[in-house]
Length: 128
Image 1 (spheres, rainbow, N blue to C red):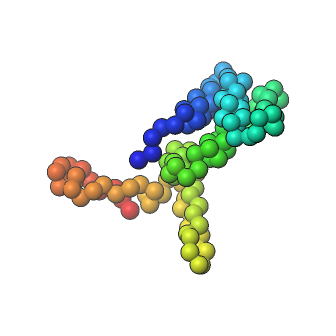
Image 2 (tube, rainbow, N blue to C red):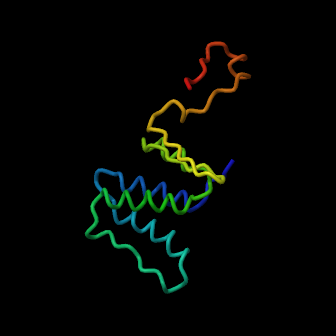
């Protein structure tokens, strides 16, 4: 269990603003800047400017910042599934083994505990 953090809420709002059809890009970049300025020494951070950026570049910047800020909080898999991205994983150990799972693969769905299936026989196990 990972509690929701303030930077995560800023990033959710920034992603929503970046995805709006009206394009509230300045608000999205301001949220990213709010998070980033706390990561740098005072006076060394140069804020991003929304002018000259299109909706795709702002959204990519927000998603990249989400990846940086939420590192180690076990949210990456859910983001990859939500965004429909393939999952690439390097298995730790002496021999590096790459595991590549395409987007929307049944392996990305967690199995349902048999305890819950026994309680309600109408529930079908997720395909693996």
